Every structure is written in structure tokens, then in C-alpha cells.
Image (cartoon, rainbow, N blue to C red; front, side, top):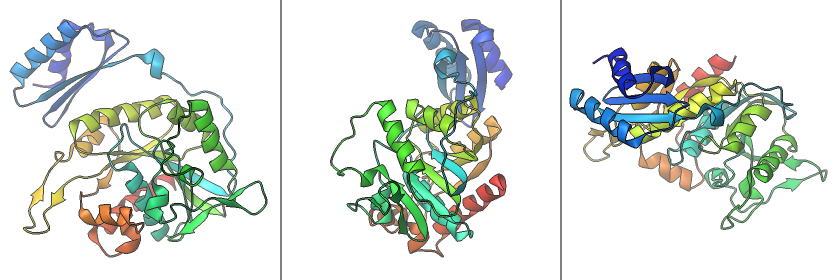
Amino acid sequence: MTENEILELAAKYYPQANIKSAKKLGNRVIIEIHNLAENQSITAKLKQELSALLPQSKISVLFVEEKQVNIGVQEIAKWQISGVKKIIGVASGKGGVGKSTTAVNLALALANCGKKVALVDADIYGPSIPTMLGYEGQPLSSEDGVNFVPFREYGIQSVSIGSLIDRNTPLIWRGAKACGAIEQLLTQTAWNNVDIMVIDMPPGTGDILITLSQRVDFAGIVIVSTPQDIALIDAIKGVNMFKKTGTPVLGIVENMSYFICPHCGKQSDIFGHEGAKQTAEKMGETFLGAIPLTMDIRQNSDNGTPIVAAAPDSPHTKAYEEIARKIVARIG
């Protein structure tokens, strides 16, 4: 069954003018319908008919309200971030896909490519970079009473909201206050001749992410996803949100791509296989690379010794460095 045939079938149940796309991604079918309220009974009938025609496929029907996400490219003043040449964001449509671990190791891999790198932890409700870079519990300092002095670990400059609060204190902040804190970290830190700044973005597509995409002059965004169906659906939403704000997407990274048993050497596709790669191809986006699910990456992150620094010759480090080289080539 072709994508056009799926589109025609969906149009029997919902007006075709509202159907944005119908895509086959391996054993997944994703239908995206815009500006139309869902009728659960009709959706159930649509999924039932498609399941009968495509018994091996998983059917997902997404309803998107353009009025909520059509932010548009607006003339909004950018934050002035001195001492930084180019900025990239690392984002995900949902939490739990290893976005922060990817951001840290990607920043170190970019440094291995000969770039002067800065890393900003803007994952404001779940800051983890102080733990992964080994400065947890250390407060930010200032030499002039105005600007923060960034931490310098493993050859990169870094700041995190986690350095301003106790690790066990939850941040109960609304969007405006959270965005103000991120702006302060970005604009009131004494960055020293940074070639590429990596910002670890909050997960999802909420107001903090929208503000960042409008206020920061991004060279591009890296989307992190696992091969899992539910993560890919949210990754698609993330890509579409950045497109609506006029923010370039550099590509998609498939994290936790596969697991190789340390005892027998057998590969297991715990979260599926090549789902992010297929999604990138279908969306016309660049597939940047795959990172395996491995104990070494997890343990080194928890111990404050990221894998790229701890095991520079490992295949995992080489995978991050290959992604870094593709990003450098794309942003110039």
C-alpha cells in the first residue's frame, strides 16, 4: 500500500484538505492532520481499516492545531551573546532519549575537531551537565560582579542552571522566569573566543524552547531520538516546530540505536532499528549518525568522565566525532 493510497483512505474519514501527510516509516504509518478536532470514533475506524490492509504496521494518527504551533518567523530582537561565533542547539521531542548525554559528548567531539567549544545547560528543569562534567556542587563565580566565569572541564567552557541551585531543589518556575535565567547564563557569562556553543535544550516543544528558538541566533538544531515509535513521533513534532520558527535543522541523531551484548557479542535492537534514519529520510532531513546503547557511555556520564574524554579511541567516541565532523561541515 503506497503513501498516496493511505492518504486517499484517510480522506474517506477526514477531509483531505486537513490531511498534512501520510508516511510509511518501515513498519510504521503516521498520518498527520492539521486544524481539525479529532473524532475518536472516526479515528478508530480509520485505524481499524488500515490495520486490516497493513497487518504488520503500527498506525498513528496525529492531530495538530496550527494556531498553537504556527509561531512564524517574527522580528524579535536576538540576545547578544558576546565571544561566541556560532551556536547550535541539541533538542528532543521528548525526555528520556539521552539528549544531555549526546550534548556533552558532542561538545567534546567538536573540541576534538579543533574547535573552541562552550556548553550551556538550558535543560532548566533537569540540569545534568554538572554531574556529567564533574563539577556538581560547585557554585558559579564572578570576577567583576557582573559576568559569570564559565567552568573549564575537558577543554571546554561550560555553565549550567544546576550550579545556581541545590540539586535536590525543584525549580517551580513559569516560562518567563525560566527564560530570564537562561538569558542570564547566555549573555552574562565571560565567554572566551568560542567557535561553537552547544546548548542543551529543554525537551518537548514548550514555551521555553520557542523563546530560545526566537531569541538565539542558531546556526542549527540537532534533534536526538531513539528508534522507538513514540520517540520518533515526538521527534517529528520537534523538527516541524523549529521549521515554523525559521530555525534550521542540522539533522537527526539516533541514540540508543542498538545494544551489543558484552558476553556473546550479539546485537539487540531494544528500541527498534534505524527508525530515526528512516524518519530523517522521509522528512528530507540529514541523518547524522547512530550511537549505541552501552554501559560505558552511561557509567562514564554518571562518573563525570564523558566517554569521548575517558575513551578517546573507543568506537563510541569515533561515532560522536563523525557526527561532529558532519555538523562542522554543515555550519561552515
